[in-house]
Length: 434
Image 1 (tube, helix red, strand yellow):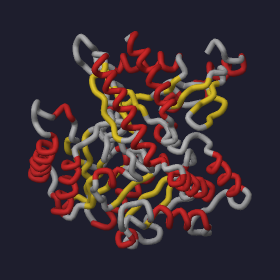
Image 2 (tube, one colour):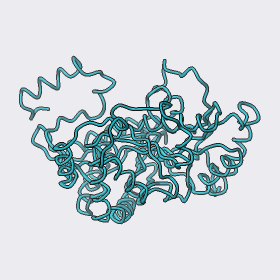
Image 3 (tube, rainbow, N blue to C red):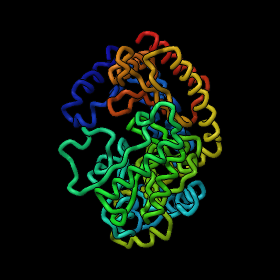
Image 4 (cartoon, rainbow, N blue to C red):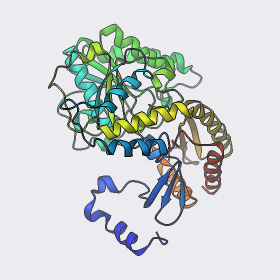
């Protein structure tokens, strides 16, 4: 902060006077004046390498020229819908283009503004179609902070404090490695455990005939970047099929190339009935979608769900440009290559530094779990120490996990080997000092 101009210092110091602390007190509250590609430009004159992508949003990099041009062209013609009252080219063409990259028959869209809205829509659709009352989610998943989505979010209890919903939801354990007995095969153990846990839930708490849907993050996001075995997700699908339960994938964070495929559903070869997509869809503009088959969506009549701002024409234009960039620049291939390279380097650091408890990831969705070396306990304090020291050296990481014990590495999919090396060199220098 010492390098900031006086006007900036005054603004930052007064932030609590006009922005809610729940919004404005996140880490690291970095004052910036510009973003470009994989970088933020700070108000202090420092260029920061961004390993957060605006929390998995800027998949094609900040202010990609093709996205910026699409936004400018759209503003020249149309700023606001509302979809349904009027109809416009960008929303129709975006829907057509999304059909080509999603799993088969996930081809009908309700466009909204945010991930939590997409989750709300997914659960409302499932309840409307099945005429069933209850939702089952998985412990540790994060699905949003509106009351409906919060009812199935269990990544941190503080998110639900004083806000427990007035309707019941049920939870099953996620395939978390903490549950895995030593020497057990996760591809065998976790599906068998899920079968038993689901049977217990259905026997003692809720009958399967009352469950409208199961909702799951195919990769645990805010809850710690946990990657489940493929066989476990297939078992979730199997249990849903057995009982006529709809399966919802929350792909808000995993979508649009983050795992090295367009969606994690393709990475794990498991097709849900409904998907919630957002974040990376429109390169930083507010846009999301609840996605299902035409067969399901057609049972959701006019007026049963709605939006004023969802599917904004400018956001749809930005989304179309973003999809084109991912294809033209072969960013799925780059994500796979750069993700593998980063994991290799990080696993070498794990062998070198006892503070690194675990490294896990798929594509450019990578978690680095830190621990207290003496106790072996997860350490959010160590993560904050590392994040702050990396920031001092011009590299921005973020955190996740139940106690903030995991460093999130989620750079734009445009990241180069040289940029990964620079960021990980800084991380290694900092780990030397922790």
